[in-house]
Length: 322
Image (cartoon, rainbow, N blue to C red; front, side, top):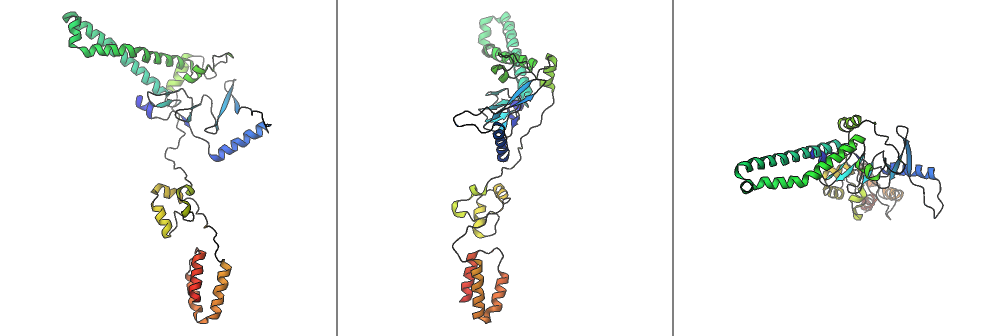
């Protein structure tokens, strides 16, 4: 249960993509209208109805989303977690919708183990003290006495934590809601998620369906090709066949090269060189002045690749003119 709690997804909600975030911002601006200068804009809240009761959905400025009901943003993990209970430093993970039952079973089994060790250590010391005396038992089995002391001080915290979460499960609440007083504050708003029955609440939390994770753990992050190349290699493409671009792409990992190849290569920057019309005019002029080389020029022009740069065309025309 400890491993399942630590290494499972607690219910992290993915952040909004740039297109989604901009669309949400447009919706908010359209709903709120133009706010005069110096006035504070209204809070970004959406109201939904759950079991004939209005529940507010708050906007997360970090994830750029409206959080679902009972979700909250963890300041330690820096993620929005669905049905956020708390962040447990002992397991090194958040406790949420997908791993709460494992956390509760972990604390419950740990409480039973602590009670078992504490009880039978006392029985062992008492049974040995009957024959050998208490002082001789302390000398012969000092480890047993040490275990009794350790269990005595840890028993209250572990059993108390298990009892507290048992109380929350019976009411179908979370630690975050209990601390904030969401359903027991001044407004006396009833909990819309409770079934008004302890058995039903326990069955929903502990025996309900296992929700799938919404994270794409095997997805590749789309990297921008601008960040992977320096300013001197702005005209180089990771998928081009030239020598400079191939050398620059070899320095990148294979995964990044594969991602960068998906992007369309940027056109080369415009330089102060002769245009294609000027080059064609120069080639025709040299053809008229030297008709003996016209066939060689036509064959060389046919062999010229369609993606040749203006520099190579200029050098070829100069060489042919000579």
